[in-house]
Length: 133
Image 1: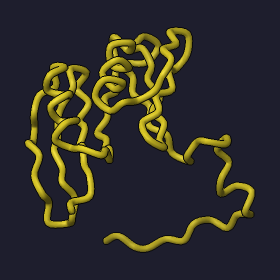
Image 2: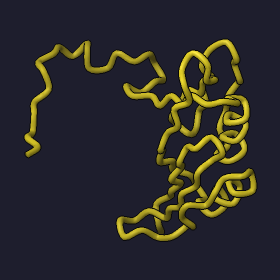
Image 3: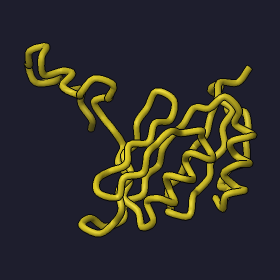
């Protein structure tokens, strides 16, 4: 049985300790060929990033950040992420054109999103969505 639990008592200063411009939770993906994944995200989602082989590359997609690291000290760790875009069909096609496997073609969900899903060659799953009109 799952029970609702209250967060431990804390003062306001511990609730948002992330640096300015960052969210409390930031996805980090570890892959072989990190530069290739960064390029894929730039091409598919219009992300901005400056590849850094010495530390995690910070990729910005819209108002969110994803950290991409080269496998080595850590084993590959793929992700399953939900990304909102302006045009699902175009983003889906760009992903497939760049080698992603279609797991779900664009369709209108019953909860109001137009959504699709792809898996990139690094085994990350991307649900790509936009609000349905």
